[in-house]
Amino acid sequence: MNKAKLILTLIIVCLFATAAWSRDIVPIVSTDWLSQNLGDSKMIVLDIRSAAQYGKGHIPGAISAPLSVWSAQSDGLNLELPSDAALTDLLGKLSIRDGTSNSIVVVNRVETDFGRADATRVAWTCMIAGLKNVAVLNGGYTKWIKESRATSVDTASPKPVLYKGTPNRSSVASKSYVLGRIGKSIVVDARLPEEYFGITSKPGHIKSAVNLPTPWIFAADGTFKEEEDLRAMATGVLGKNNREEILVYCGVGGYATSWWFLLTQVFGYQNVKVYDGSFEEWIKDPNAPVSTYSWHR
Image 1 (spheres, rainbow, N blue to C red):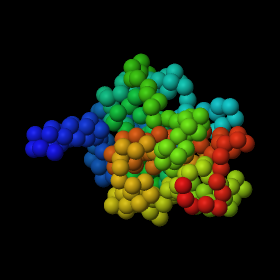
Image 2 (cartoon, rainbow, N blue to C red):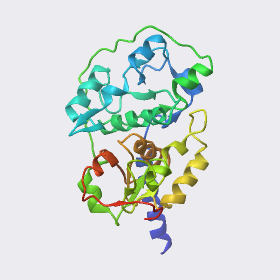
Image 3 (cartoon, rainbow, N blue to C red):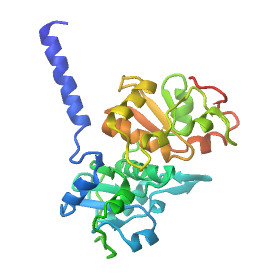
């Protein structure tokens, strides 16, 4: 490659990278950062704990938006994405006008593995609805309280507006899509190894899937592990080609979003989708290929 072509290639790569990382807020914010930025009029803090937990105390100014409002049941499946209409209606009620005017910080509890994944599930849903600047609070409300930071029992009452953002479901994979990509894309099972391997009551994994457990993302206190370690986990299983298509699933679609969020928002992988129906839907079809007692693709 001559010098001119090399320079042109580098310019294109840089422009692409800039577009991929064009957000006004880092994807994982610390409690220190949030405490210092609570006065920002463009920032909306969404507390996705239960309404009862919110009522007992929350981050000052946070809006109650329990996990239950961010999902729907469809065809007997749990934790499915709401319709576009339902999402735009919800965001309008939360006083969010469009995809770029606000910075959103999602706050959850982190005492359990499933609770730790709730924040990325809501963040992913927000981004599907068209929001660009969505972050999760590292350590959630659990860490906030442990550090004896300010709390409030005053209920925030957002003024309803017309949400004008544009939903985009390009990061969602259907069962038929996953079926067609087996052997062509990297399929990732984000459940625990014993579920992936086939020890539990719902044995096995989608044929060709590799295992990258979501619970391993977090430290004992519920915060994210060091970025260097998380990157090593990802590249150790997926490789360093950040343009290869990756399809992530889990039990019902919660764990899968944590790896989606890290891969796309932190590490710059460009073609990652979540299979929302996940293994709950997959095993309803007796013809859907499943592998048991195997670690390899």
